[in-house]
Image 1 (cartoon, rainbow, N blue to C red):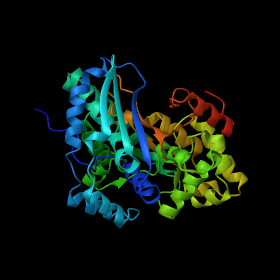
Image 2 (image 1 turned 60 degrees about the horizontal axis):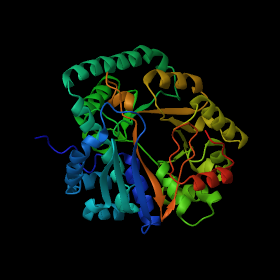
Image 3 (image 1 turned 135 degrees about the horizontal axis):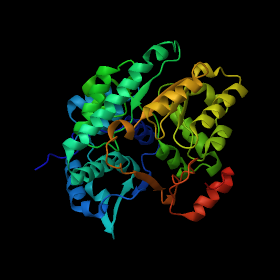
Amino acid sequence: MNAPIVRSLLENDLYKFTMWQALLHRQPGAMAEYAFVCRNTPAFPLAELKAEVEAELDALCAMQFTQDELDYLRGLRFIKGDFVDFLTVFRFQRHFVSVETAGDTLQIVARGPLVHVMGFEIFVLYIVNTLYFRRLGNVEAVLGVARQRLAAKIATLKAAAPELADGGDFPFIAFDFGLRRRYSAEWHDEVLETLTREVPQFVRGTSNVYLAKRYGITPIGTMAHEYLQAYQAFGSRLRDFQKSALEGWVQEYRGDLGIALTDVVGMDAFLADFDLYFAKLFDGLRHDSGDPTAWGEKAIAHYDALRIDARMKRLVFSDGLDIDKALALYRHFRGRIQTSFGIGTNFTNDTPLKALNIVMKLTHCNGQPVAKLSDAPGKTLCEDQTFLAYLRQVFNHTAS
């Protein structure tokens, strides 16, 4: 019998902890609903995984943070003591998450207090991924190809090393962002151990807090869409939700974790809110949809218009990257602005098997719908078309 897929409650993305802390301090009574969605066609109906997913969630809800893990979190300068104290008694509650099927579709919904259900997302995603790829079998053949592809990535970086070394104050920096859609835990371990051994000058950290602790590297992450989306339901005018979310972040972290996500209602609407005050307070911006080059040019133009030296700011790219795309973006922007690259699926699930495109997104908060208006077709997720239309109208956003 296989061991539980979730090895530790620490094996979550860092931004889950940073958003969790901020929302616990500012909106401890908020209620939320998250829904699982598969955006592409799997090799077999995901509904077949229902019983196995249920068993893995049972195991997850029996876990607690260990003292060693809590001590690690307490040692991160931006994590506050009262949040760690909360985590000492925290356990996921099984009755807050349900697993159902509708035909071939697997339906997973987490519903309850925001600070009790927001943490389910990443665990659900890598539980489903792991169970799915176990069913497809032929592990050694799959990993044989995956190892060849990983070796090719490393060879590409090593070949580019002389050029990248000339970057001076603008180094090439990549991170592992591949927890949620990894092929397996064992493969994730091998990928990160190999990358940090072979090209440590280029791969500087991981979003996976458990592996950051294990390998002594930097845990990476700030905020995700759910943080900003939740502010659509927190009482300010809808038009002001981004400014309220950014202000909440500034007050929580006071200079730490200064990368802002830009595509909840599109880059243009974001920049309209990202005035001189926020542009000076935040270290940079994260790209997650739309054309990355055009996005980066808009960011630099915005800094220039505010008379801020863009060379002192950072762009973090994290949308469907591979090494070649990351290097091309680095070369395009080198010398004009700092850059970093979060590479996910292409690090931890680049195999001959087609990766699942699965997400688990915040759909409701405090009893009302929330949404993001992505800069890319297919990434908008909201069940309430009336609210979507209203959101588009408020931010003058054209449907993709």
